[in-house]
Image 1 (cartoon, rainbow over the protein chains, first blue to last red):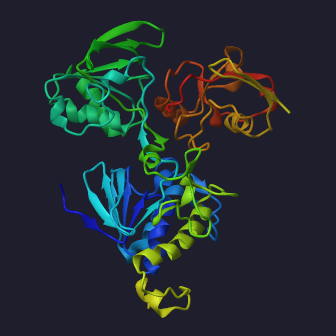
Image 2: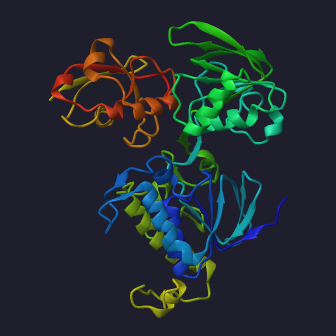
Image 3: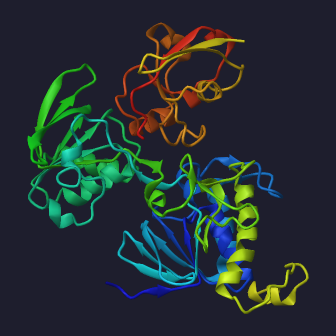
Length: 342
Length: 107
């Protein structure tokens, strides 16, 4: 068990609203750490539409999803928050008044005075292919992520997909696996051209196999895969012997562990008090697309507004003895000092 | 206004009026076609608005662009008539279009 990380506020989700929460909390001398399941910041902006323009950020006529994430990172730099990427918050335990102990899928433990859930549409998780009877194999011989490469040493592997994840793992695992078969629905790959070339060279030299088609059926017993039936575009079936299958079909948003945190919910959204954006649990806030209240609009700008109001109440938990004086960044020397501009 | 028919995998039929210039995905959402998820909202980055274009309409609807074809890699049970409905614009020519939805959009 690693050492407990102590902070004022833990933010669940590093999308635009989670990032802006760092800013609003930072102005009130509140330290933050962020946890996000993606391996990058920016949330949906970075994952779903990095190159698409957004037209409704106040004062910014046009900016891309990635551009907004980058700009927010620049804006929050003075507050130097901690980032814990590629991890999901799994449990929240109340250990004080309020004081929370939070654990992540990466084995980290945090202790914080308040929690801000800025989890958007939930957590991005791998898409599970709709193959009948796949469930018993999952996490035994069907894996959506590679944690330890060595687990695949000397095995027959079936890797499915045409993007960078499928190609990268094909190239990384080919030297240690017994045999790698890459399966893709078409003979064209969207992954990095360099990876595609390397993969094609391995196929040409006979070091691995490439098949074009889609998985139709799995065979095995007690969770242990023995082979997969593959259907080509004409419907012809072919069988590939395999000890493990790694499907890479991209990510989808699932609510995930939020539903276990004893929060009042309405149709997979967290109910909040509209003056503070606090949930039914003291010191746990929900801002951005994950929350709901009368009149809620799922807009980034709404999330920004919610972050500002949330910070006022969070201050009460983090610095209970300090009186909060409302100030403007334009005129307050103390705020400007925090921003490093005065 | 052009009419579009959505036939969901469970047999539910939606015959709806579509706005010219909107996408087939937007038309589905406005008319509560539940099996169109459209997680990314039309960015061609999530493959959760996958449809099968009726064979008779294939020529008029046309083939996916290279980037749409690449995104179809993240869909399931992809067939020769698979398209992402966010990438099909409603035109007068498509009046009467029939599309079917797959049983699974990845979630």
